[in-house]
Image (tube, rainbow over all chains, first blue to last red; front, side):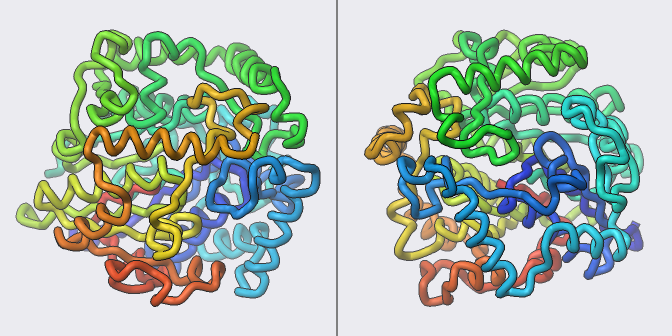
Length: 155
Length: 155
Length: 155
């Protein structure tokens, strides 16, 4: 028991830029510390591994009281793009890799990336629509199997 | 130790249709795999077990950059209902049960459903306002007790 | 092993009033039950321990279908403040302490509060900008170290 590998199973359920990073950063930190890490992309989180969307994840200033933009203005055309550009610029300054590069780093480091079958069906996606770092499309039952003994983190 | 039952304790804190499903689906998968599963409904998540609301959970296109609807339009009357109808239709096509039916299935399968006392007080609800599948109204302290040894998943 | 202390590691990633409470209430319940509890504030969750913001956390009625306010109206000036005042009044009636007081109580009870280095850099904050209850600013790697064996809860 004392030699059992520590394991993190992270579920990414949201596709906004600000909620894509926490799961990927935690998975990366787990791998750097030598722990097993798997990431399961489901519902809106599927956008993060959707090859057509991964480079265009947005951040909404609407419904997020932490952004200092009044709702009347936050809803105007262009404000979502502006909020997104601001966050991307901030991440660049801090030398945080873009999401696609983080996925590549994670897979290279041995983290296992999985997409949720049910979400794939809902959004009518096939395996070929995903970035190549996704190892497999699995069911919620498979996720339960694979996350045995893991610290499960739902983002 | 090696025969200890695996246990999942899921907290549902959001009442939108898209965030109701992940917790219920995970609880169901856990039960199907023979693990203990409990679901604790708190804050907005109380809507999921509110007998008057469970059949009318909505999905907001606002503040969700994964939905392909610009904020100016997403805020117009009717758009929330439209987004909701689209998701319900998708779930129906995939033969995913509606939320009320999922709660019935979960209780039948032996998952334990609990409502949060503090949230009940905030929203001025009584046990009789909830679907009958809710076993009890419990405090955060009770939840901590019951989730001993569990994989805790906060949705 | 059987005498190992139970441990909860809670990640607060959101800065809205309604999402500040669940993490703090769970940490408090864990401490009251005699378990170790740490709270890691990251991304928007940093607002919760930002000395200038902690007393002014807001709640957005936008993008939250559980609030009975149509999107057209929810976006009008003043509606966010109204929703916030309503929730604060509700919490007061239930004698739930305000967020700053909860942080004080948590630190007094021995919960450990940490801020995320990366989020601090993103928002250009320094340790002196935080409430004094924050013990340290740590990296994601440090969080992984400190959460060894813990039940991890991502809010």
